[in-house]
Length: 598
Image (cartoon, rainbow, N blue to C red; front, side, top):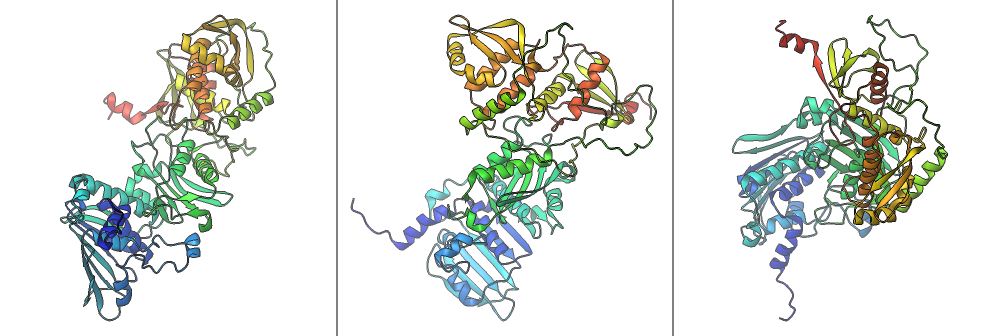
């Protein structure tokens, strides 16, 4: 077949597929045009989930007759004039492709007015010639898209059912509304409102409208600057998660984007706090010099590329991490207010942290010849640098002026440990409730926090009796290849026969614990893959899990008090490293109701 130049109408329909692939993409393009026009209210009406009819109405600036006529011509735009303008574009649209693309695959009608004199009506049927006429219309623009893809049956065949297409429109409009809380949005079908969001005073109010007040209360404010990037917005505590990224909105200079790099930054921030496949809600606004971000990567303008991709990802991760993490305040010399009297002293945050790790070793355990803590840190940093991107270097923690709240957790000052249930749960009393704490996961969180603490890192302890770890043939081969890296995390081991290794020293938190299981799991973490988690984080989580007290370990009262204190003064006490809950609360009123004390 010989090469031929495509008919202009065919070429236009082919190009339209890059911008318009389903009703939700039509809504996105039209609403972004409304936002560029300064609209304060945008209404979207759909029929059959947008597959038969889409109407977008706004109260923006509108267009004069000549602009309305030109708006349906390809590459006709008011946003840029020269190629250099693309490098600093500040509007959501600029390519001049959205309206002609939509008009080429539908029965398209645009009616607009600048509020003075008659309005203008432009009708285009399937990419044909535009018919322009005068029409009455208030200030603003209304676009009607009928029978999308009626002239491209192959593409229409790939549309999903009305319910799925309506859900996609709702999600798209929700993201746009989150990125622009100063605008009112409404989505309806057959007289039923699926989305109705009045103008919000700020982003938090918009999040309360979208997610509900209870979830909005679990979100923490973000204000962060790193180099060229300013990150603001809100991120949920790790205890609040959803099953998809539908509740995570990221905008760059006001543009809602779907950027894998920025999503990975969000994942980095929540690493070791949420289970795989769970995503805490977030609304992030990233401000950056337009010359440092390329929004012309894809015709939909939803994919962006930064001149400093690593810095952008790091800024997102650090900003969210700083918001959701918690640090205990420095001890204050000011006198404490009078407290209620209990028969037993409460835990206090002002007492020095003992660095407790429950141990069941004999008291005459010899002192361990640990290498210098600094050397262990330096080795870990060298391995992390050498194995990028499998392990990313952490940025130093920045102490906020006021540590954020930690969600629904007991305050340390008012607690009294009252005992242990079934050798697995610590019972903690505060004035109006009883808390049941899973001792294993609470201790696991406290240990992981210590392992990640650069200021007081755990050392390495020699084993009085070396542990011999039996391995399969394949595990033995992997161990031989990774013994050097495992030594960075405290496992000093050597081959001991064809299918075993001898462990002679471990990180101090593992002493007298399950060394064999920890070594095997750490080996699996080194050689395996786990999307969303770096190698280093997986190994440290494994060490913390095997170092922690287990269900069935009986603890003395001082041991329980120290464990609870270490847990509650960790940075992320709401969930264990695998995302599980650590505790739950029984209110005194609830207990009274159970006992018929009304």
